[in-house]
Length: 151
Image (cartoon, rainbow, N blue to C red; front, side, top):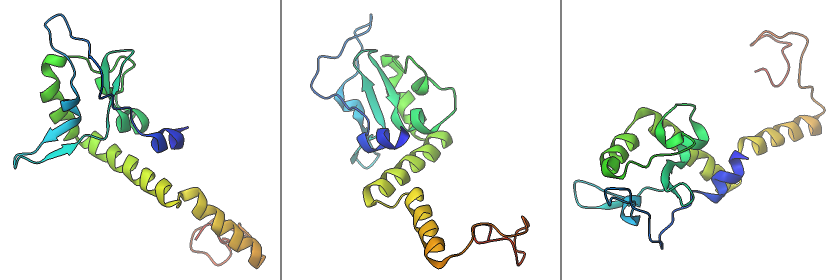
């Protein structure tokens, strides 16, 4: 399931009249971009907006993190008044950086067609064509008879 979600990517709604909170604050498509100190803007590819819940989610944290933070909760983040500071803090957090890299690596593997499963399949095919066994007579690593997948 995670593989399919990574292939599809987050939903970034652009053309919509976003709902405002009771103070008139609301999400805008400009929030999908981060302005750097040198004036350059980069896309927040990880940011997803839910129309149904009128809230935002961190796509990669939702898929890869077990942390209990607002952008991975069922309701998402919807404090529009503090959103700018929150997004800046979140995208610099160690948890986000770690899962962002996991998400990016998996998406690159899927794009190139070289996932871990495919690497394992090629190893299995090699052992099969060579008539080699998976396991040896001992479970100890680096011993002579530990088999071909334990080394």
